Amino acid sequence: MSDAEEAVNGVPSLLKMNQVQSVYQNAEEVDEDGNLIVLKMQASNEFKAKFNLFVRQLILDCVKNARSQGRKMLIPDDVPELEDAT
Image (cartoon, rainbow, N blue to C red; front, top):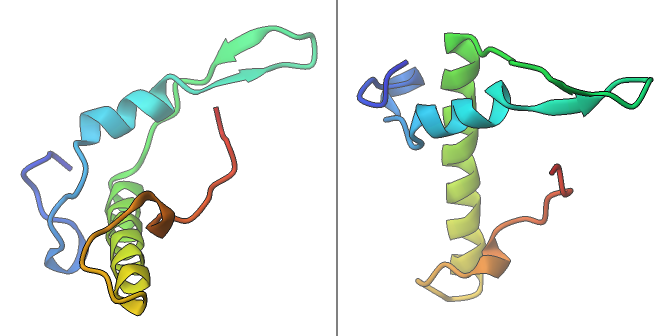
C-alpha cells in the first residue's frame, strides 16, 4: 500500500508507510546466546490496512477522551500509556 492509496473502507492512510516499515524492518531481538539479531520483518498489505484502521481508532479514542473532559484540544494525557517497546 503506497502512501497515496486508501485502506479498508475508504479510510485514507494515516501514516507514512516508509516510516512504519523502518520500525519493523529494523526490529531487533537478542538470541539465547546474547547475540543481537536484526529481524528484517515484512508486513502484508492486509496487516498495513488493519494497522491503519487501528491508528484511526486510536485517534478517535483520544478525541473521545478529550471531549469527555469538555476539551477541543488534544493533549498528551489523551494518548493511552503503552509498554515501552524499545
